[in-house]
Length: 320
Image (tube, rainbow, N blue to C red):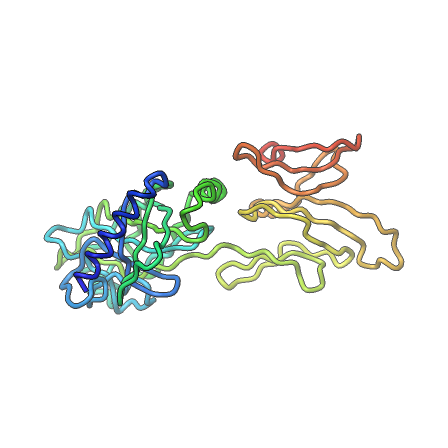
């Protein structure tokens, strides 16, 4: 197993040399399968395959408070880190801090207090797979934030302050990196000290998925699905709503409105602009038709026709 990883790393180093222009900064082997992979800087009482031990990083994805990742250094855990893969456009992560098998174990061990999170573009070079681990090439950090966690049992949410629109635009320019997956690095910068042991622990980490917007089945309204909860944002039984275009981050939607009772109504097409962050329609003066959204110089514009039948592009930042 160790020989295989060394050979793969040597091959990947040569791969890096031939693709240096792609800004590959490092290579990692993460444990896991399907869409979730993990790695840690150290592991308490490590035995067998790395990341799969009793306190291995793989425990972070099992949604079980009776298991945890525990760092394995002689210190208090400051400076230790984990890597995890995440899909793009997620709203954040949900952390079950400390070792939450019991209240006593939670208080006995160190809990991360301040963490630094970093977002890294990545891709899987073909063939870099072992029996238990998958190889990832990563680029430099493209977004970062520092978070102070609460010292409490249960999950706590960390919402990202990243601009996914800018991040997606940046990564799509570089064809080598994945467009739908990133690696998140979480580094412990400070801890809540335990009353018995000096090991920093985290029980679980889950992603908070992006919100999904759907037209109602009868096309009279719009719903938002978030964390398995469905909210109706608006509903008008006298109108039919159809989506013309939406932005990548789903912040803006263009609708066409038509009367629900078309047979007995004068058919007049009405264009409406909707902002999902404010959850309201936004008035646009002198725009009689909306064609879609266009991106120029990393800025988003509404493309349409004004009252003088001229094609215009309006900066979305100016109409919020």
